[in-house]
Length: 96
Image (cartoon, rainbow, N blue to C red; front, side, top):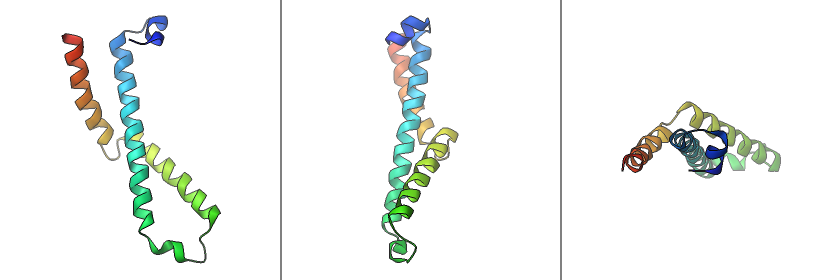
């Protein structure tokens, strides 16, 4: 139980489930960012005349945005699987 759940009057289970969903989505976003970065590292695009620090920054920002959108919309389904698995553990803790 967190302090915020006590002060807001929210049931601990509801707060825990919301926190779990947010954490699962954040993990999926990190995973997708790393996946995109790894895929891009193997690319020959670094050798073009259009490369440079500005493009690298833009690419990093775009990858971050794509990862955040994919995790919120269930693009890869990783967050849903994590939430399902850890949610079962949460239900066991609540019941026993």
